[in-house]
Length: 270
Image (cartoon, rainbow, N blue to C red; front, side):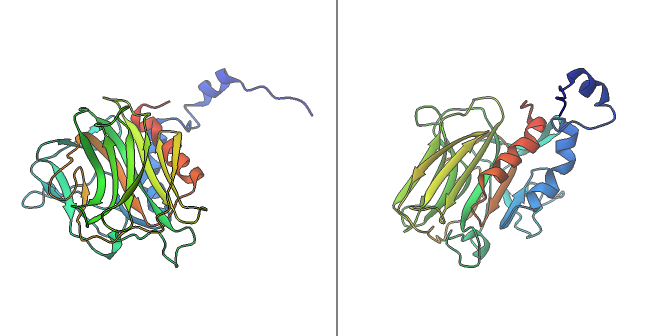
């Protein structure tokens, strides 16, 4: 069988007729359908859609189809970085919240889910390394803790950190230190109840770190679901957030990698 060499010059010449997979326009037009097809999707807040003029003009709209819109506090700023939409929060008064409801009470061991667990994350652009900063959370005071996906800038390496509790107080976590300040990072955390011994995992871009946990499920706290903060307005994030999502399933590695691979061109990752 003859061996066919890749002709990079021909690929470049044909890119005007055939879209490249690493083209921002290609990623931009496929984002909504891709995220809405995630198994167990409970919320998808791309930050492209926000409330109308009036009392709801800062609200963050859920485009998953489940209608879990988040109420905005203070005055976050909506914008775009090239083709990537974002909301910018200032780390002092901006966040989003919604009172607890069954859709946010993801235990991670649901019998009706083939791959039980939780997966959540976003693209985030940190601009400050002061303190622990929440990205997505259902996290209150001791006794009311469920799950937290955060930029843990108060730890060495400024990691992306996923933390869970099975009793509302005691916790296990996994950290991934491959974050970069003042640039876009793809951060995803996962609890996989189906793995032997249960597993916590955290991705930053394509790099995955894991940690074992003996905790069999996630506590259903009364804390609100938040983006950019935890309940009580603590742990506020400073920077930009885009394409935030929450799933009641342990998404497989290849699906998480596909999310990064098919959106990275929007965020100037090559």
